[in-house]
Image (cartoon, rainbow, N blue to C red):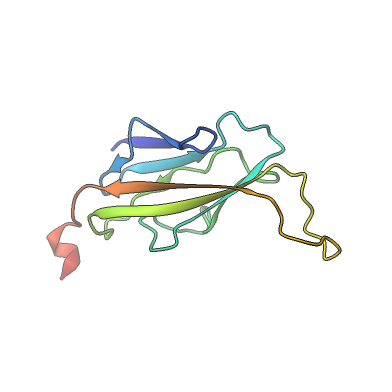
Length: 126
């Protein structure tokens, strides 16, 4: 099984070795070259192809009180063949979320996708 690293610090987001995955592969989201004070939240607005567990709760949080990389996340054996778009919201830690703040909080938003390249095993689709 392969491991794909998604670097959120590049523009556009980069994938090593690439965004293509198969069932059972692992995906790791990384803060890359962002300073340790930055945080990120990764969400999949149209369906998540990764297995969620107690050790890897969803949405995926990085930085701040969390690690700068996620634990390895497994591509679900039931994920259908398609691109699973995700959104990453990056916060540099300078904005406050107090109710006294007026106006929107400025956050960096990035988009990417994980390409599941094969259909689930037929025995799982029955």
